Amino acid sequence: MAGADGDDSLYPIAVLIDELRNEDVQLRLNSIKKLSTIALALGVERTRTELLPFLTDTIYDEDEVLLALAEQLGNFTMLVGGPEYVHCLLPPLESLATVEETVVRDKAVESLRKISQEHSPVDLEVHFEPLVKRLASGDWFTSRTSACGLFSVCYPRVSSTVKAEIRQHFRTLCSDDTPMVRRAAASKLGEFAKVLELEYVKSDIISLFTALASDEQDSVRLLAVEACVSIATLLPQEDLETLVMPTLRQAAEDKSWRVRYMVADKFSELQKAVGPEITKNDLVPAFQNLLKDCEAEVRAAAANKVKEFCENLPEDNREQIIMTHILPCVKELVSDTNQHVKSALASVIMGLSTILGKDNTIEHLLPLFLAQLKDECPEVRLNIISNLDCVNEVIGIRQLSQSLLPAIVELAEDAKWRVRLAIIEYMPLLAGQLGVEFFDEKLNTLCMAWLIDHVYAIREAATCNLMKLVEKFGAEWAQNTIVPKVLGMANDPNYLHRMTTLFCINALSKACGQEITTKQMLPVVLKMSNDQVANVRFNVAKSLQKIGPILDSNALQTEVKPVLEKLASDTDMDVKYFAQEAISGKLSYHWVLKPFNRLSYI
Image (cartoon, rainbow, N blue to C red):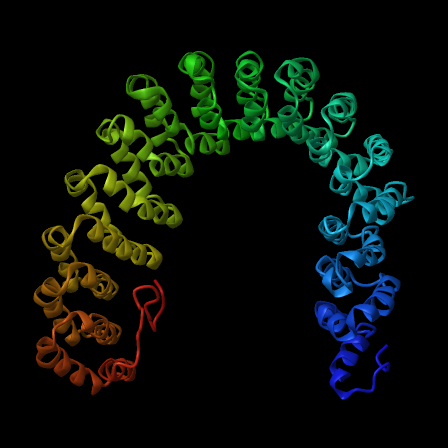
């Protein structure tokens, strides 16, 4: 093929084509990724008659190359001459759909599904449907698993006779000897059911669903649970009790925890699919059992769905169902032995307050919130704190404040610095919920203490935290409450704390405005230019450059410039460098995020 045309303009194409045969995998991969370029240069006729047969004959390559090829062919319709010739793409994709590597097969099926839409109904029956049959009756399980993903895309557009054949092939695959094939069929059962006529959903799909849900392999049974959601949405309400619910009840009590986990994970979707009456009679007891399951993974999955399940209960008796059936289980989970279960519950339990209202929240939920705020697991406490806004809307944050404060203090002083970091990130949210008075009284000291933490990441986060608090509470609050304390750290004997003063000034100057920056912050920065530690002095230079745009020209000329000139002749080379950079104004150095410390991050 490479030598077929002597035109010099096609030489690069000849190179790409030659690279398709190259021993180097990377070269072959690069060439495959440029397959559309090759096809464009060859034209639609030669692409169909030469390139595609060549690609079909060389489907014995590295998986990475085959994956790229499967993806490329899905976008090849116009390169072979449009929908009229799209069937030419089927042979190489059929071969790719039978290879051993799963990701290659999946990508080939994805491309086949894509180009199936571009087949006319006639071409679909003449070319595409025979391909599906060949895959479905292949000797190797790989081809049969690929076939499972193709039934639903061709079924709606073929004749009744062909539809009957497709249904028969799907039935056969659902009872295949190989578990991998049954798994593939179970995973596509819901999708296939959606394109079938209702009579065949009842006569064919339900029996297949029941069989797969009773399969000896739990990996097949759990996929049948997913299909249950789709099937339930297709059936009339009167048929659900007899056709779906027996199998669903069986799955909710399955001997394998993986199947029960899948039921718990899909519970809200199942609830919406079966409707309020069946939810009340069947799903409520099933949900109670899942919340009490012997496996922690199942309890955690069910706990995650508590809020959603309660929201979707019928309004007329929602409160009664929650108080009588769900809340007792939730109370047990609050003191569960597994921290993942408690953490999952803590992430959603606050949402129940908006459902149950003020009185029930104060009487029944508040003790649970407070218990979780005292939990030994930091994740549980953090999940409660991060969702306080739900309770704030219903009962007001004051009800929580007495127990909230000790929990925050404990987290703020936790031995693990990542836990301390997490609570700092929630502080602006808490501040907005608690209000400025409560914050000043209880939490201000805590925020200032973080500025002298021994871990640099905490000091950095605390600086950013102050900036967000000033944006929330305003410059006047900052001037009276924060700025004096920050500036007081300029005289701290620890040079790291003195540097933190500079970092805070850097962060706060814009939020505080020109007047506060010029009158209160600038004098402290200038005074620190005489610091004995060089690290402090060169951070003074960077700080002056940072706050320079906020200052007026008079302050820059009379106060800032002389200090920078003095630092530019400093005995320390780093101080000189940063002072000169500040004078020239060449750097836009965002050191609040990444401060330079030539000694170390301590």
